[in-house]
Amino acid sequence: MQRGKLYLSRFLRTWQRTRDGHAARRDATTMLPARKRGRPVASLKRALLVSETQPRFVRLLQWMLVAALVAALLVADQRYRRLRRAVARDLHEEFALPARTLVICIGSAPQNRALRDAARNGWLQWRPDGGNAVEYRFFTDHPDMLLSDRHASGGNLSAETRQELAQQLRREHAAHKDMVFQRIETGYGDKEHNVYGKRGLFQMHWSVTHYRFEYLLRVDDDIFLCLHRLLYEIEQRPNRAFFWGRFWCNYGRHRADENFMLFSQDVVNLLTDDTAMKLLPFDEDVTLGWNFGLLSWVLQLDIFDDQKRLDAQQGYLTKYMHEQEPSDDASHRQDYAQFCDRFMFAHHVSASVSSEVFKHTVPRLMYTVPEMTSPRDGCPHKEQAFIPGRHAAHLPNVLITLDSGVGA
Image (cartoon, rainbow, N blue to C red):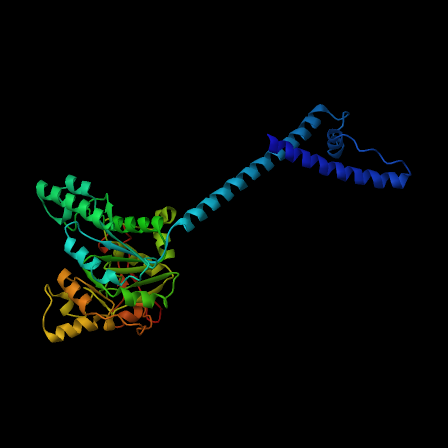
């Protein structure tokens, strides 16, 4: 109410000054004495040509217009203030989050304690001192979900086994504080609906609500990552509209695998935006990699298809990294020591091999940074095509391919 009076008072004063100016000029022309300043209401009447001689309905209409103008100004002011508060709140929330260069989301089965410990005591030790560059979390099934789902952890576990596993998870989290429990359907490959994609989106949502970061890396727990080399290299990679992975070269499956997926923050923001995801096709029952396979074809991204350094099932690059137990052979020890000089990542690595490779690796101060290769260059002798609906009921059943001469 006070703000409305303020607007009305300003409006009246403006009209009063305008009227006095016109009156002074008119009086000077007619040699009449200047009129004294009248009351604001009387001035407003004259400014709006409100006259007692006018019909009543005309005067009523004119006053209604004044009231509507004041109301519109009040509404506009309120909306502006709300918008300003909302923007300030969003900026405060965003910049209040801890800043990180890289967030690593590690998908882990509840029973894979040995793999988690191998990572904690191994390649995760290459995080820079201070803790501001890298943040990681193991994402696994919530203990309550284990107790309620007999298919938990990829098998028909007894009630006693599931209860003990749930207690072990709680103790592990209390000791390390590096686990996030997902209240999502459990299991891997043993049910019709495994919500792989939903778990991947959950990890992204958790990351954007807890940290400000430049890159997000999504991996599994049975890996070995040359983290020190990755941190050295991403300083020379794009930090907008960027994706790094390794593509399958099979016909109809030309997309990156989920075992190593590195996104710039803006891509993660797109995938976690509720409005955008309502417009983009997404199937929760297939992997995040398969879902992103469609988006990687239609979004204008800088894509690094790292075929020669990501040692994974798309085409294994080594044998020694995928053995169940490490070898004492001298040639193997040399291979372990040189792995990070030649490669960046390996998938399907046992806990014991991961620990052995870490023990023999000596980080370098500098590494050779290769040029980025596009998906088209990564599979030059294969027909690059992707059929989203081949393994996904809720993705379009279309053939996406490249003609010769068309860039990837």
